[in-house]
Image (cartoon, rainbow, N blue to C red; front, side, top):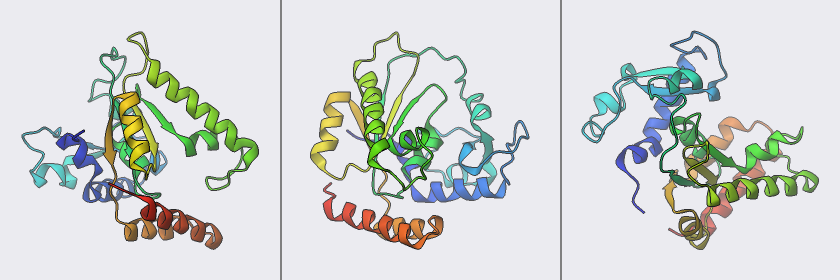
Length: 228
């Protein structure tokens, strides 16, 4: 299933890099409400909205003067997302290598009415373990919660409260992606970050050597298994 040009733009590394730079430059301050947030709680918002007519104009899409950094709530206001009635739902499978930028992409496009299924975040929410510490005692519970959310997506009716759904995962095997596409009528969004960039992201964000080596191993195995 083809990815529409605007969604495709938000997957691009040049935009993700620009968005991160703008958020860091903001010092964590939301341009609308003035409150201070963690960097990953902020959104890079295009002042001139992206359309099919201007998506190829870098003076709009990649111009830092056309981007303001907003908190999640303030970002919803210009997009009229508060209390919006749910219409036909869309499901997106956002996949790619570890540390490719999948979560950053979803954070840049999802709204407060959307459902996000991310196994890492689910596990982190049910225990005191760090992001890379997943003991079997809690890991299996996180899988159960994920499967409940996936079932909600699969069986949702027009009475649901959420709007769109984003399923985040690596999914290197084509069969698994095609199964998600069929069962959930999902649009596939590939965050196609090169292996070298994924490893650079690990080195920049994971400080503990032993965990860094394990994470690099995840990336290596992903690219060994991945089939387009």
